[in-house]
Length: 118
Image 1 (cartoon, rainbow, N blue to C red):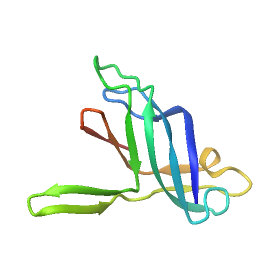
Image 2 (cartoon, rainbow, N blue to C red):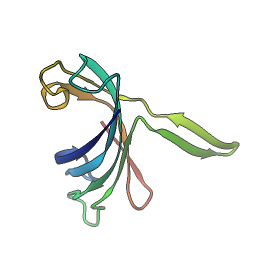
Image 3 (cartoon, rainbow, N blue to C red):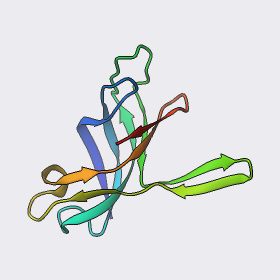
């Protein structure tokens, strides 16, 4: 099951502080928010409108949570699974705004650097 996220509130930290808007896709396990008390989810999306107090910081990037990541090592490529984020909430309240969520994501900036986002 997938859902499209368009967030106008701060969703990820830009380098040096600030926030970005997220436009992406989330996949919920099991059954999606609002149908169970707890759920896991992954996110893959584009960040835009990032604000920072660091001159020249990027205004856009990507955010990945719960994705497969391939890293080149001296012995060849190695693939790892990022952990799913978790959330909780109950019907009839929409779980995301009415519940709680936590997880770790990886932001990739245009220059190839990464930021871990909690």
